[in-house]
Structure formats: C-alpha cells, structure tokens
Length: 275
Image 1: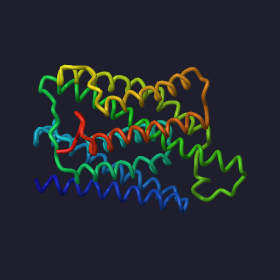
Image 2 (image 1 turned 180 degrees about the vertical axis):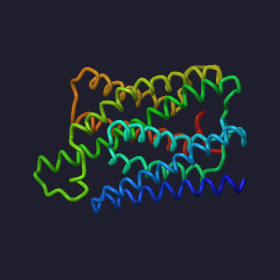
Image 3 (image 1 turned 135 degrees about the vertical axis):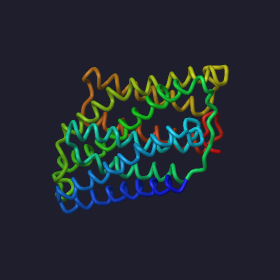
C-alpha cells in the first residue's frame, strides 16, 4: 500500500537524519544538536511503533509469518532498549551505535523480498512472545554492550597511552559507566537469550518433530550461548570487569549478527528467511 510506503520512507529519513545529526553534534561538541538528533530518532521510533502496530492490526500478509516484519521488529527493539538505557543512564553516546544499526536494519527490512516462515498457527504465540521477543531484546542489549565495549577499549587505550583526546573522546562518559552498561546488558541479556534459544527448540519439536536437527543455525546458536554463559558467570560472580568483558561482549554481538544475518539469509537451513 502506498500509504505504508510513505510512512516507511518517513521513518527511514528520520533515522538517517538522527544518526547524521548526532555525529555532527559529537564532532562539534554541541549538546543541543545531540539532543535534537535523539528527538528526531524518537519521532522515527514513534512512527515505527505505529507502522508495526497497524500492519499487525490489519493483518497485512499475515505479518507474523513474514520475514520483513521480523527484520523491522529487530530495528524497533534496538531503539527500544537504547531509549530505556538513555532514560535510565542518560548515555547519549549509545545513540552512535543504536541509530545507525536501527537505520540499516529498518532499511534492510524494506529491501528484502518477503519470505513466509513455517510457523504453525497454534505456535505463533510461543514463537512471537518467547522465541522472537526474548532473542530480539537480548540481541539489542548486546548491541548496547557492543557500543559500550568499543568506547571502553578506545577510552582505556587513550588513558593508558596518555594520547591526546579529540572532541569526541572528551565527550565520552567514564570507564565505570561503560562497564556498568556491559554489566547490565549481560545480566539481563543472558537469561533472555536462554529463554529465546530453548523455546526455539520446543518450537522445533512441534514443527519438525525433533528438538535438534544438527542444523547449522542450531549448532552456531549453542556455541554463542556457551560463550554468553561464560561471560554471564564471570560478570555475575564479580570476577570480571573492564577490558575482558568488553571484548567478549563485542565478540558475542558479532557472532549474533553472523547468526541473524549470515545464516538466516545466506545459508540453506530450516531457519532460512529467504523467499
């Protein structure tokens, strides 16, 4: 429908404007410009919420079985988690990660061909509420840990080498703040990742009559879960702080992207989102 295409284009333009404006605000150290960029992104997020809600309410193409809807939902979830952390911690800097990721993911949802997913009707609630909901929120939390981890490593390197700090580096919060983001993201993200992963195996048992099929997606996900479990254990017991959890969070997020993009869209598996 033309009205939805116009709405989608408006959302993409707001996300793009927000991302560019925030970078300019950082470079020229203008707090007001940074705040304007966040409000532009928030306007896009509100419209994106309406877009998803309308498509679901109108049942366009049975959206809960359409790959485009889920990719768009991933972009929305990234910003939801960003705004929650922004409200709680006042970390404007995370917009440098959240806004571009949301822009790329949302634009990608508009570009891909629709693919119908094999979701039995009686399992849509389980699929959507537990599997997709939990995994998407945990990946969004990992994205914030990824951004905080990169910033931590950059700032820590500058401090240790006593290098000259540019305008962007001077605008960064403290190392403790970035470590706290990592801590929260891991402690909240791992239980959700666990729920999403194992509810997926339950769904597979109903869909393919077996819990484990040695599918590449399943093997890769278990590997990511084990690494994530190790990081969660180390953070929960208080043994790890600083550079080690920052590096591991970066790795886990990259592996999650490989799983979500590389395996789902470019590999022939049960979980393929290709048409």
